Length: 558
Image 1 (cartoon, rainbow, N blue to C red):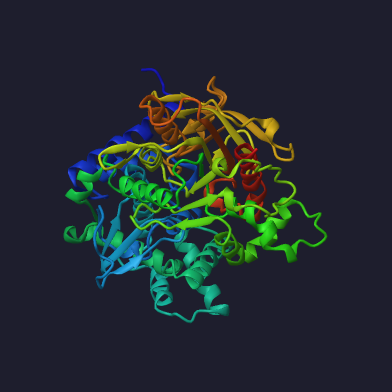
Image 2: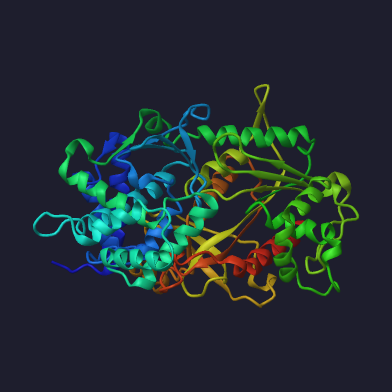
């Protein structure tokens, strides 16, 4: 029998995880410790994603992966043995506690001490993301469970001490160090590794109330896994409601969201103006256009470069926004549950406003031809197709189609890089879908020559992946070192691209619409210490973000 390569095994694992997750969503429920859950677990273990580090080592608990997952799941999920995934529920005016994770735009409700409800608005990508994280947590929970009882069935001395630590809210000084030392034995990690994760979770717990702290998380995971084994009635169950299954594949939230955006454009009288879409965060375009004028008194000698100035301007966001709202910027926060906010910027209201000298734009259009910029917040995975497909579709007024004048579509965002480092820039020549034969050539209106050369720019195909948590070195190296010569991976570009192509085919937008894709590297998933689990870019991300923003604005406004 022919031996498979590691990359082939990885691709099979990703496909198995996806097919199983799809089947479970249609079935309506599963037990992570049951047969179906074991299939997901085996797939994840076979894949061994870089972001989950030492997950496959039964002797030690993966702490960086735990930090990553804790930031993206609701507080207290480790305590629950009933997890419900639903479509939209009217729960805002109930007694249930509403929970938003620290680093994901998703809403959950704590129904009881042991039950939590996820509201799914972003489609299958969100479901894959949640199931991947829950599968990882279950693997770690059962590793922790093995540290609770000794060979005689008695509770270990280390677990007795942990139980006391969980119930002591005033641990500090030598007492805290002893508790962390004891916890490090349970985790199979060094004292310094344990203390680092404890401090990371404690900081976000104190600042944002986003988790329960390391001692309680470990204790609850272990006890829940022990109950899983000893009491079938208390086994962890994950449910998918019929309303969620009916919603999958429909554009319920996208339609509501896009209709509201288009109605606002009509209310402002911008329907005949050239319209430019930028998918970006909610601060970079605003800061690039307005901060120099809004913060005149902070310019110093006026010779500070754009990126240094923006770094200082981070402390004055409310002042910049207030100025922008008086000079052509209109905010459109999402109220549909789609979790994508928007800004509309009227460049006709921009007369007399100074922009930082390094942003070289002329803005020399007649008022009726001055661009309108629609900034839309980041989508999540396959949600990007729904976003762009609905946005580019004609707006129906009195049973007649109304078309907007879309001139360009610019997609900027974060991606994992393969040949470079964090903070580098990638320009795709194609989007290649992982796990299926869908590939799209990009006629990219961005070129390395548009950038100033101070940051490396990599050009080549970019892989659109099922999820950032479902990647490993072997699969990614195959994409990079084979004839694909891929330079990066991300979750949205191929979905955006598919919607743009469909809009051209259907006659919703002209064939010559300018399309721009650029990504900055938030991580390198094949380099140890540079995965997403190693932390965010922080201020290092300002230069590549604003370099891409500057180039896109120059393309639109010149």
